[in-house]
Amino acid sequence: MRISIDEIVEEVLIRLDESPAVLDDAVEYGSPWFDLRSLIKGVMVDAAERVILSAEARDFGEWLPIGGATSGSFFLLPDDFMRLVYIRMSDWPEGVTHVAESGDVAVSLRRHWLRRGGANHSSPAVALTHKDGRRALEIFGSGAGSKVAEGGYIPRPRFEEGMLLFPPSLKGRLLDKIVEIIKNIRG
Image (cartoon, rainbow, N blue to C red):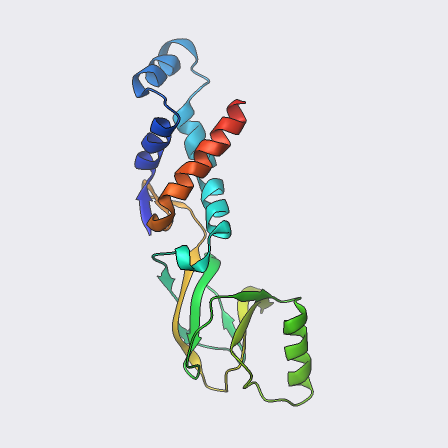
């Protein structure tokens, strides 16, 4: 889940057809205010977030695991959660990859049905919501005492010790997005 920041910068420079030697001379002798490497690093996290949000669940080759018990029909998400890849509850035969928004009509209908005394044993589904001041998944179609049997999520991209926390399977898309952003900035 980590990619070298320097490697990303160098590959973006190659895609921009920029010579590292010319860039070093420009910074040292002519345009110290223009540091393309710093600009690339400056847009990297934003570009990574855009790529993650636009990717299909099947595009992720790796993710961080989630698991554990629920709080009623809610599963509290890790603080660095950005996107769900997959979740299967212990009483589900199969997992889900789609996360509904809390305000979706289908979610409202499920909640209404549960308030009217219906059991929470309908088809598996999850909705992104908030519980106790934290982001959470509201779990539908699972009984009391169930827990997350399998699950994975993509964390919010961030820099860690010279690395970008980001799925390597999407590296090509990240490079393309950074190049696009840099070209838009340069005009």
